[in-house]
Length: 224
Image 1 (cartoon, rainbow, N blue to C red):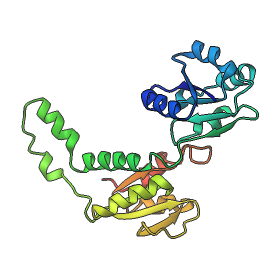
Image 2: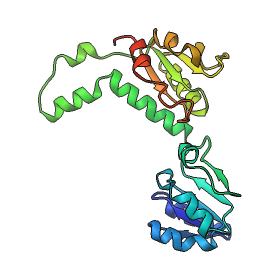
Image 3: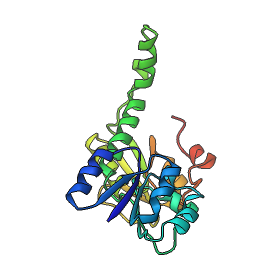
């Protein structure tokens, strides 16, 4: 099997994996190299940033053997935007990154709640900002909405609950979720947001979700 790799990360790890499975791994550093290597490719591992409007016709013209395209991320909105080559299976990373993405979301939220960016700015200016401590908050007893309760949303909820936060899940149908204190259907989005201290968006970008959080949704959140 011949796999063409158009990914700026994980190349040594993937090369070691390929060696153990009798797979030829070819790295295409740029678009020209990708076009050269596609003729004999059985599979393509690609970063979504390279999955653009020019790629699909390129694959259909120059990759007759291609049967599989693997995206290096959980997201697949590039495929929805640009379509897929005929006869080719496209897969994403699935749930693989969910714990890592959830940790990052929690880290960003904690940074805001604990006023870390403000403290870093003051530190860089070598000054004490006495206005920061009174504005520091906590996730304990906070109410946090999680829009999208798939694998990432559930991992986020588990971490929020460990911090003592109440979790409001916002899903398509609004059915109860074990890791959420309350669940709303997305049709009641603004109602759900009205009582929340923070909102984390964990929904995939699709035609249905694009623009879901706009001016009206932000206005539905409390002023803080």
